[in-house]
Length: 350
Image 1 (spheres, one colour):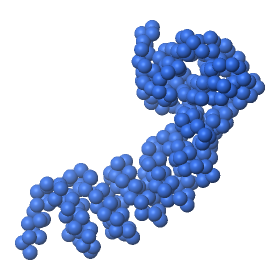
Image 2 (tube, rainbow, N blue to C red):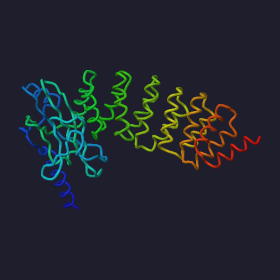
Image 3 (cartoon, rainbow, N blue to C red):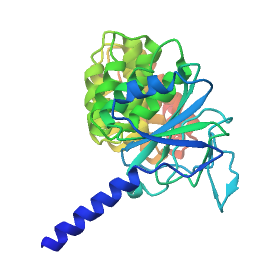
Image 4 (cartoon, rainbow, N blue to C red):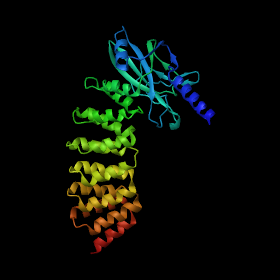
């Protein structure tokens, strides 16, 4: 038993030591230092030097599936048999680069500083890029950076005067494993900020923050701005937490704005067909707005034909509203289904 504990400690220490190592760099003047004074202070001091430079550090990341590194800033060129990332040039997109979700334990945050200001932020999966080409610039690798400190520093880069940098910083924040990342994104999505910034923060809550992100989105869904709530529907729809479906159903039935309910109906159909049918039937019968009812009929028509035709026939035959019956008949005609034609014959014979 004691040997097992010793082995675990040795493994932890070796993993920590590896995490302190910079990535494989090409065309870089490498310098390593400890960010003992705190990340913001360290970056501020480095920014007082002349000319552009790069800095980087590693933090624990949320586990996920990533795409190939041969995209975005990478031009797909090879070195030692694998592809990497060019920091100078490219399209300024954030990077992620492993294909096994269980293998990723960290990300490297990379920032470019010029004339005392951060003008570019990106991230790469720590274990994945075979190399990073710094374009001949100085590169400082920082050790000892705390994840919460990283989130706080990146949050300070999310300002309205540089939207591209804000986008990059938000994406990097979202990849942090620490719970502070969710808290920071929720604050950015709050009503105190401009709409474009709120929308970005909410997007990353849904895309990367799992259950905690969904809880934050649920709180935001009571926002007084219907335009913002309508955009939240998509953010909830991309959350992988199973409870997201129930939130969409709640919005489809209960939101005071018709446009929000319409968008929720659309995404329910995309994500959960079995639950969607009951919600659509309910909206056709009970929604107070005729346009939402029509949207629900249209959504029924988008179900697989064996489900859609019986549902549309039911609306056409039983709904008391002539406008909805007409809507259902229109989509039945589009279906080219024999059951629809048989129903049309019955109508003509009367």
